[in-house]
Length: 104
Image (cartoon, rainbow, N blue to C red; front, top):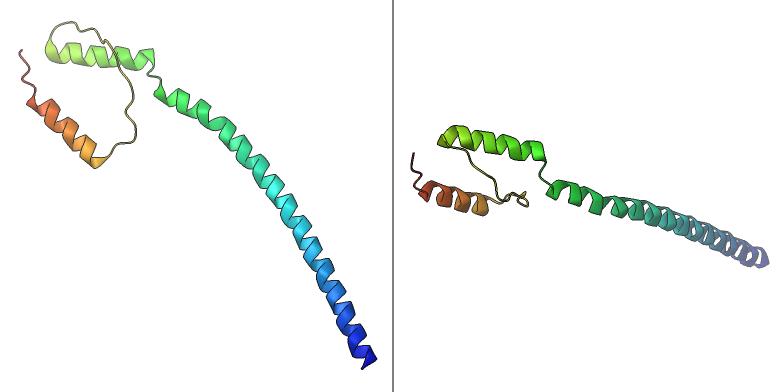
């Protein structure tokens, strides 16, 4: 009976040691994940700022295309990229653009 109690005590000590090892491993993984997440978050504002900018080449190409279509020189006053396209928003823009009566 004494050996059974010793076996249980030894098993408990091994289990506690395993739990502590796993906890320390988990803490290390949490730190690594936090560092990786911080690195990704640091890159996000840069990527978002780049996407909002419309390049001069793109504006020039738009101006040339509209000038060719209308037959007279145009000046682009402003241009910006739209956020993610939703089907409802796209349909609304199509209706508004189709309702314009362009004179040639």
